[in-house]
Amino acid sequence: MQGILTKDTYMCPKCDCIEVYAYLEQTRSSDEPETRMLTCKECGHGWREY
View 1: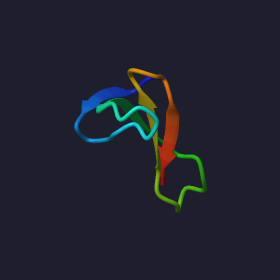
View 2: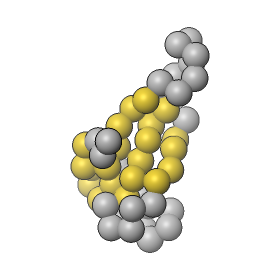
View 3: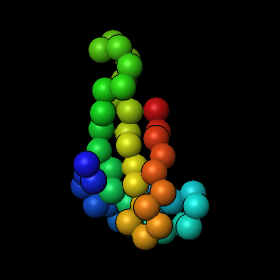
View 4: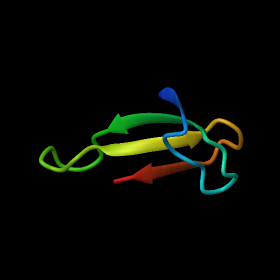
């Protein structure tokens, strides 16, 4: 799943690209906040923000 393409909202920590695919996923219990899953459009690097 790629998610929604964002510009200027996130920056890839690997290549500093500002075009990043983002989507939310519930990775922990339902009383915890969702995890933001991010993938760089340029290099394909993936990371998470909690």
